[in-house]
Image (tube, rainbow, N blue to C red; front, side):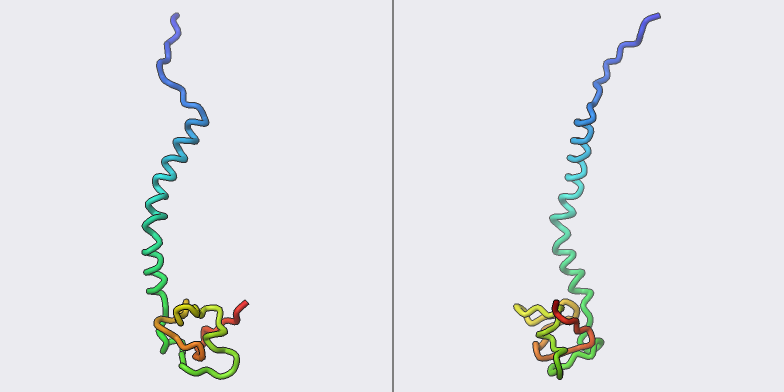
Length: 98
């Protein structure tokens, strides 16, 4: 009885891993490139209104926007509240800077 001749190329484990890496990177690269503007827009959409967090332009005590972990001094904005905020203002979302 004759043995069948295999003409199939056997793929090595290294070649299989390389192929998997190439396919994975080719799928993730567009997601990485195009997701940053989308993520920024989503973050902006998740900000709450000043009214909903009882924002005032002049807070008393240490709980002022300028001393809050969510305050962005370069733009006078907040990570949580929509719109510009006064560094002397305050709201209920105040978090002490670390």
